[in-house]
Image 1 (cartoon, helix red, strand yellow):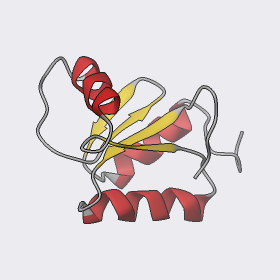
Image 2 (spheres, one colour):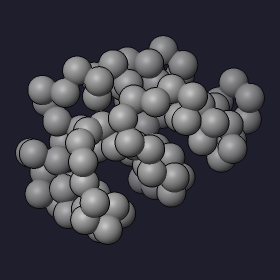
Image 3 (tube, rainbow, N blue to C red):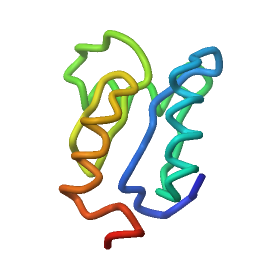
Amino acid sequence: MSDTADPKIIIYSTTWCAFCHTEAQWLDHLGIPYVKKDIEEDPEAQKELMEKLDGNFSGVPVTDVAGDMILGFDRPKLLEAIKTHKLDPKTA
């Protein structure tokens, strides 16, 4: 996991969410930096997420890839957004 001042990928998650942990491990394996925010432990993260979703929350993980909001651990959508925004260090 990377702590950058201006993160390009943010995973909004909870401690009990298996898909959240799997997504983080997958990004680690790919070497793609991200920031993980627990929406149960961090009220500001929850508020931030709800603003980005216009209050239409339906579960975690929700991943913000440079402004593209992706619900669930959807590898094809995540890879496409990572590619579109040139966030894969191997191809950047």
